View: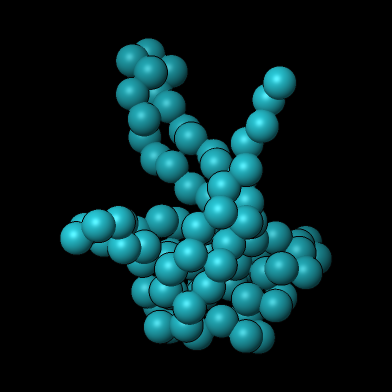
Length: 88
């Protein structure tokens, strides 16, 4: 069984970065999530209608609950993790 679902709540660290290419809209933003006494910064990426809604309604400091898929990029030679982000 393969399940890859992530649920994260946090605050937006800055305004979403909106990109439009060939009628496809994407929104990139980062959530600040408190884990104990530490704060983790989780990059998120939205597409299509969710990206359009992000552009319209999301602003720096706003609380947000995100449900998406965990995407991990690894280096081919060493298997080391290069980055982790949430696809919303």
